[in-house]
Length: 195
Image 1 (cartoon, rainbow, N blue to C red):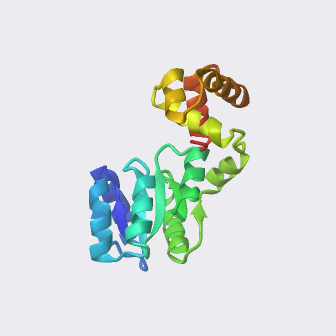
Image 2: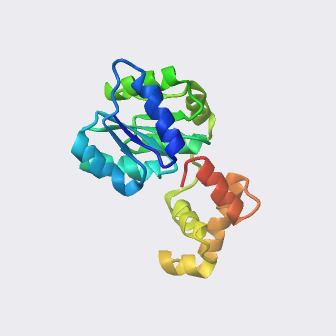
Image 3: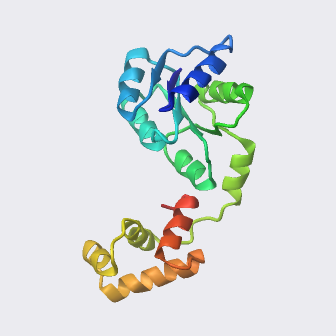
């Protein structure tokens, strides 16, 4: 397996924990986004354990494209339901918190290597409890651009809409999400995995 973790202490801890399992062998390590795919291509691991902060979702996408034989299990220090949804909407097969017991991580890696999903039970329950996306595709487009700090006029220009239509979309977004303002709507949508 490949360990992709930017923090040396955490990476070494993962290495020690996983190497203590008789059937698991770490064949490569990476500490940056740019190191992951070359490490996977040169060592051909069955599974990559990827830190979400590396960032894990782009790494999973790159591995799926360039090293399709390498399944991905994402680790997060501060997981939320939105992260789990985004991970499973993409190519990742596993998602666990860094607080997971080493034995459970090892079992999750075995599941992912076998092509099955692996997720902490609490994270899975939280992802299932989180609300489904109430926003339309166009509202998501508006919110994505707003998330970058764009004003209504800039959003209107980018989406070829009138400023009034953009304001209507933003108003509906805030109503649907229960947000106090745009920034709050972006936070809610991101935390819920809609953006």
